[in-house]
Length: 94
Image (cartoon, rainbow, N blue to C red; front, side):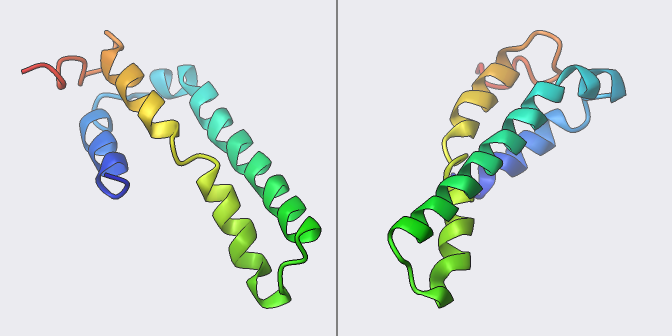
């Protein structure tokens, strides 16, 4: 599911999003950037407070950043597919 959800989202919505809709959907990109930034800060705090070995610090920080947005597609995909302005609005029915 983690591998195919972004690919499925891109294949279903990629052709139906134009420049005007991309500008209207800027909060989604801002939300992803903010979630990654918070994840990086949490990862840095984690390695600092828990005294993670130096060779594992980059991995711990990166995993915290990516793991912070792990469940975001569970919210975004259904809401985007239910939006009447998107070309894939009826993709889930059937």
